[in-house]
Image (tube, rainbow, N blue to C red; front, side, top):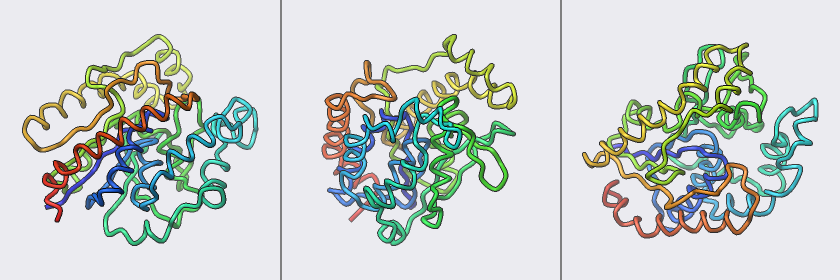
Length: 284
Protein backbone atom coordinates (compact mmCIF):
# COMPACT_ATOMS: atom_id res chain seq x y z
CA UNK A 1 0.00 0.00 0.00
CA UNK A 2 1.23 3.50 -0.87
CA UNK A 3 0.12 6.39 1.34
CA UNK A 4 0.01 10.05 0.46
CA UNK A 5 -0.67 13.49 1.92
CA UNK A 6 -1.99 16.37 -0.16
CA UNK A 7 -1.55 19.95 1.05
CA UNK A 8 -3.78 22.66 -0.41
CA UNK A 9 -2.34 26.17 -0.73
CA UNK A 10 -3.90 29.37 0.50
CA UNK A 11 -0.95 31.65 1.31
CA UNK A 12 -0.98 32.44 5.05
CA UNK A 13 -4.14 30.36 5.60
CA UNK A 14 -1.78 27.42 5.15
CA UNK A 15 -0.62 28.09 8.71
CA UNK A 16 -3.46 25.69 9.57
CA UNK A 17 -1.60 22.99 7.65
CA UNK A 18 1.60 23.95 9.48
CA UNK A 19 -0.15 23.06 12.72
CA UNK A 20 -1.19 19.69 11.29
CA UNK A 21 2.39 19.10 10.08
CA UNK A 22 3.84 19.83 13.52
CA UNK A 23 1.36 17.45 15.14
CA UNK A 24 2.47 14.76 12.70
CA UNK A 25 6.14 15.44 13.47
CA UNK A 26 5.29 14.93 17.16
CA UNK A 27 3.40 11.71 16.37
CA UNK A 28 5.94 10.47 13.79
CA UNK A 29 3.39 10.24 10.97
CA UNK A 30 4.96 10.30 7.52
CA UNK A 31 3.56 9.06 4.21
CA UNK A 32 5.24 7.51 1.18
CA UNK A 33 4.33 10.49 -1.00
CA UNK A 34 3.55 14.18 -0.52
CA UNK A 35 2.24 16.74 -2.95
CA UNK A 36 1.39 20.36 -2.32
CA UNK A 37 0.17 23.40 -4.15
CA UNK A 38 1.56 26.88 -3.48
CA UNK A 39 2.21 27.44 0.24
CA UNK A 40 1.15 23.85 0.86
CA UNK A 41 4.34 22.78 -0.91
CA UNK A 42 6.53 25.59 0.41
CA UNK A 43 5.65 24.75 4.02
CA UNK A 44 5.39 21.02 3.43
CA UNK A 45 9.11 20.54 2.87
CA UNK A 46 9.78 21.61 6.49
CA UNK A 47 7.45 18.83 7.63
CA UNK A 48 9.46 16.28 5.66
CA UNK A 49 12.72 17.69 7.10
CA UNK A 50 11.19 17.15 10.57
CA UNK A 51 11.72 20.75 11.66
CA UNK A 52 9.13 21.20 14.37
CA UNK A 53 7.67 24.75 14.49
CA UNK A 54 9.99 26.03 11.76
CA UNK A 55 7.10 27.27 9.63
CA UNK A 56 5.15 29.03 12.36
CA UNK A 57 8.30 30.60 13.80
CA UNK A 58 9.21 32.03 10.39
CA UNK A 59 5.70 33.40 9.85
CA UNK A 60 5.51 35.02 13.28
CA UNK A 61 8.98 36.51 13.02
CA UNK A 62 8.78 37.85 9.48
CA UNK A 63 5.09 38.46 8.63
CA UNK A 64 5.57 42.17 9.33
CA UNK A 65 9.10 42.39 7.94
CA UNK A 66 9.25 44.42 4.74
CA UNK A 67 12.00 42.18 3.44
CA UNK A 68 9.52 39.29 3.60
CA UNK A 69 6.54 40.95 1.98
CA UNK A 70 5.38 44.43 1.07
CA UNK A 71 4.81 46.76 -1.85
CA UNK A 72 8.41 47.96 -1.74
CA UNK A 73 9.41 44.56 -3.09
CA UNK A 74 7.09 45.05 -6.07
CA UNK A 75 8.91 48.27 -6.96
CA UNK A 76 12.31 46.58 -7.01
CA UNK A 77 13.08 45.98 -10.71
CA UNK A 78 15.14 42.93 -9.78
CA UNK A 79 12.31 41.41 -7.73
CA UNK A 80 8.87 42.45 -9.05
CA UNK A 81 7.08 40.42 -6.40
CA UNK A 82 5.12 41.30 -3.27
CA UNK A 83 7.48 38.89 -1.53
CA UNK A 84 11.21 39.43 -1.31
CA UNK A 85 12.15 36.42 -3.41
CA UNK A 86 15.82 36.21 -2.49
CA UNK A 87 15.05 36.87 1.18
CA UNK A 88 12.26 34.28 1.40
CA UNK A 89 13.69 31.52 -0.77
CA UNK A 90 17.42 31.85 -0.13
CA UNK A 91 18.34 34.05 2.86
CA UNK A 92 15.87 32.45 5.26
CA UNK A 93 16.58 28.77 4.42
CA UNK A 94 20.32 29.28 4.10
CA UNK A 95 21.00 31.71 6.97
CA UNK A 96 18.15 32.85 9.22
CA UNK A 97 16.15 29.64 9.72
CA UNK A 98 18.34 26.97 8.10
CA UNK A 99 16.53 24.25 6.24
CA UNK A 100 17.67 20.75 7.19
CA UNK A 101 18.63 19.47 3.74
CA UNK A 102 20.23 16.33 5.16
CA UNK A 103 17.13 15.13 7.01
CA UNK A 104 14.95 15.92 4.02
CA UNK A 105 17.19 13.81 1.77
CA UNK A 106 17.05 10.91 4.23
CA UNK A 107 13.27 10.59 3.74
CA UNK A 108 12.50 7.64 1.49
CA UNK A 109 9.41 9.18 -0.05
CA UNK A 110 8.72 11.63 -2.88
CA UNK A 111 7.66 15.27 -2.65
CA UNK A 112 6.03 17.10 -5.55
CA UNK A 113 4.78 20.64 -6.10
CA UNK A 114 2.00 21.60 -8.50
CA UNK A 115 2.83 24.43 -10.90
CA UNK A 116 0.98 25.97 -13.83
CA UNK A 117 2.62 26.16 -17.26
CA UNK A 118 1.87 29.67 -18.56
CA UNK A 119 2.02 28.59 -22.19
CA UNK A 120 -0.42 25.70 -21.89
CA UNK A 121 -2.39 26.62 -18.77
CA UNK A 122 -1.96 23.00 -17.68
CA UNK A 123 -0.83 21.72 -14.31
CA UNK A 124 2.59 20.14 -14.07
CA UNK A 125 4.01 18.34 -11.06
CA UNK A 126 7.66 18.96 -10.25
CA UNK A 127 9.69 16.93 -7.79
CA UNK A 128 11.34 19.04 -5.12
CA UNK A 129 15.08 18.49 -4.86
CA UNK A 130 17.49 19.97 -2.32
CA UNK A 131 19.92 20.59 -5.18
CA UNK A 132 17.62 23.48 -6.17
CA UNK A 133 19.15 26.01 -3.74
CA UNK A 134 17.27 28.89 -5.40
CA UNK A 135 14.09 26.96 -4.64
CA UNK A 136 12.73 27.73 -8.10
CA UNK A 137 10.13 24.96 -7.88
CA UNK A 138 8.83 26.40 -4.62
CA UNK A 139 8.85 29.89 -6.11
CA UNK A 140 6.89 28.67 -9.12
CA UNK A 141 4.23 26.83 -7.12
CA UNK A 142 3.71 29.97 -5.00
CA UNK A 143 3.74 32.49 -7.88
CA UNK A 144 0.35 34.10 -7.38
CA UNK A 145 -0.84 36.17 -10.35
CA UNK A 146 -0.04 39.88 -9.94
CA UNK A 147 1.87 39.29 -6.67
CA UNK A 148 4.68 37.39 -8.41
CA UNK A 149 6.41 37.55 -11.76
CA UNK A 150 6.38 34.39 -13.82
CA UNK A 151 9.09 31.96 -12.67
CA UNK A 152 11.14 30.49 -15.50
CA UNK A 153 12.35 26.88 -15.23
CA UNK A 154 14.15 25.30 -18.19
CA UNK A 155 12.99 28.16 -20.39
CA UNK A 156 9.30 27.78 -19.51
CA UNK A 157 7.34 30.43 -17.55
CA UNK A 158 5.28 29.16 -14.61
CA UNK A 159 2.75 30.54 -12.14
CA UNK A 160 0.99 29.29 -9.01
CA UNK A 161 -0.13 25.66 -9.14
CA UNK A 162 -3.50 26.64 -7.69
CA UNK A 163 -4.54 28.17 -11.00
CA UNK A 164 -4.74 24.73 -12.60
CA UNK A 165 -4.89 22.30 -9.65
CA UNK A 166 -5.69 23.75 -6.23
CA UNK A 167 -6.01 20.36 -4.53
CA UNK A 168 -3.87 17.85 -6.44
CA UNK A 169 -5.42 14.68 -5.01
CA UNK A 170 -6.02 13.18 -8.45
CA UNK A 171 -2.30 13.43 -9.21
CA UNK A 172 -1.59 11.61 -5.94
CA UNK A 173 -3.86 8.77 -7.02
CA UNK A 174 -2.20 8.72 -10.45
CA UNK A 175 1.15 8.44 -8.66
CA UNK A 176 -0.05 5.18 -7.15
CA UNK A 177 -1.35 6.24 -3.75
CA UNK A 178 -4.03 3.96 -2.34
CA UNK A 179 -4.97 6.07 0.65
CA UNK A 180 -4.80 9.82 0.99
CA UNK A 181 -4.96 12.42 3.69
CA UNK A 182 -6.00 15.78 2.23
CA UNK A 183 -5.32 18.90 4.29
CA UNK A 184 -7.48 21.84 3.21
CA UNK A 185 -7.21 25.47 4.31
CA UNK A 186 -10.87 26.47 4.11
CA UNK A 187 -13.83 25.47 6.25
CA UNK A 188 -16.28 22.82 5.03
CA UNK A 189 -18.94 25.31 3.91
CA UNK A 190 -16.56 27.39 1.78
CA UNK A 191 -17.15 27.60 -1.96
CA UNK A 192 -15.05 29.74 -4.26
CA UNK A 193 -16.65 32.54 -6.28
CA UNK A 194 -15.63 34.26 -9.51
CA UNK A 195 -15.65 37.92 -8.53
CA UNK A 196 -15.34 41.02 -10.69
CA UNK A 197 -11.77 41.46 -9.41
CA UNK A 198 -11.05 37.93 -10.62
CA UNK A 199 -12.34 38.83 -14.07
CA UNK A 200 -10.19 41.95 -14.08
CA UNK A 201 -7.16 39.88 -13.11
CA UNK A 202 -7.79 37.51 -16.00
CA UNK A 203 -7.72 40.43 -18.42
CA UNK A 204 -4.24 41.33 -17.15
CA UNK A 205 -2.94 38.03 -18.53
CA UNK A 206 -3.96 38.36 -22.16
CA UNK A 207 -0.32 37.61 -23.02
CA UNK A 208 -1.02 34.13 -21.66
CA UNK A 209 -4.60 33.35 -22.77
CA UNK A 210 -4.56 29.93 -21.14
CA UNK A 211 -3.69 31.52 -17.79
CA UNK A 212 -6.53 34.02 -18.25
CA UNK A 213 -8.85 31.05 -18.82
CA UNK A 214 -7.46 29.26 -15.74
CA UNK A 215 -8.23 32.29 -13.60
CA UNK A 216 -11.84 32.32 -14.78
CA UNK A 217 -12.30 28.56 -14.36
CA UNK A 218 -10.57 28.26 -11.01
CA UNK A 219 -13.69 28.62 -8.84
CA UNK A 220 -15.63 25.94 -10.70
CA UNK A 221 -12.67 23.55 -10.64
CA UNK A 222 -12.13 24.14 -6.93
CA UNK A 223 -15.76 23.57 -6.02
CA UNK A 224 -15.86 20.39 -8.12
CA UNK A 225 -12.78 19.11 -6.28
CA UNK A 226 -14.32 19.77 -2.86
CA UNK A 227 -17.48 17.94 -3.88
CA UNK A 228 -15.52 14.95 -5.18
CA UNK A 229 -13.41 14.82 -2.00
CA UNK A 230 -16.59 14.55 0.06
CA UNK A 231 -17.59 11.53 -2.04
CA UNK A 232 -14.15 9.93 -1.65
CA UNK A 233 -14.26 10.51 2.08
CA UNK A 234 -17.64 8.76 2.26
CA UNK A 235 -16.06 5.87 0.34
CA UNK A 236 -13.24 5.82 2.95
CA UNK A 237 -10.57 6.43 0.32
CA UNK A 238 -9.46 9.73 1.82
CA UNK A 239 -9.45 11.53 5.14
CA UNK A 240 -9.92 15.29 4.97
CA UNK A 241 -8.72 17.71 7.65
CA UNK A 242 -9.78 21.36 7.47
CA UNK A 243 -10.07 24.40 9.73
CA UNK A 244 -13.24 25.25 11.58
CA UNK A 245 -13.39 28.82 10.33
CA UNK A 246 -11.17 31.09 8.21
CA UNK A 247 -13.55 34.02 7.86
CA UNK A 248 -11.74 37.28 8.50
CA UNK A 249 -8.34 35.68 7.95
CA UNK A 250 -6.52 37.28 5.01
CA UNK A 251 -4.31 35.24 2.72
CA UNK A 252 -1.65 37.86 3.58
CA UNK A 253 -2.61 38.04 7.26
CA UNK A 254 -0.33 40.10 9.52
CA UNK A 255 -2.24 39.76 12.81
CA UNK A 256 -0.08 37.45 14.91
CA UNK A 257 -2.96 36.46 17.19
CA UNK A 258 -5.00 35.26 14.21
CA UNK A 259 -2.02 33.37 12.83
CA UNK A 260 -1.44 31.61 16.16
CA UNK A 261 -5.12 30.73 16.52
CA UNK A 262 -5.33 29.11 13.09
CA UNK A 263 -2.04 27.27 13.65
CA UNK A 264 -3.35 25.92 16.97
CA UNK A 265 -6.54 24.73 15.26
CA UNK A 266 -4.42 22.70 12.83
CA UNK A 267 -2.15 21.34 15.57
CA UNK A 268 -5.07 20.17 17.69
CA UNK A 269 -6.78 18.52 14.73
CA UNK A 270 -3.54 16.75 13.88
CA UNK A 271 -3.16 15.46 17.45
CA UNK A 272 -6.79 14.43 17.84
CA UNK A 273 -6.83 12.57 14.50
CA UNK A 274 -3.35 11.05 14.78
CA UNK A 275 -4.45 7.56 15.80
CA UNK A 276 -7.14 7.48 13.12
CA UNK A 277 -4.60 8.48 10.47
CA UNK A 278 -2.03 5.94 11.72
CA UNK A 279 -4.67 3.22 11.39
CA UNK A 280 -5.72 4.49 7.96
CA UNK A 281 -2.10 4.46 6.77
CA UNK A 282 -1.47 1.14 8.56
CA UNK A 283 1.58 2.56 10.33
CA UNK A 284 3.28 0.56 13.06
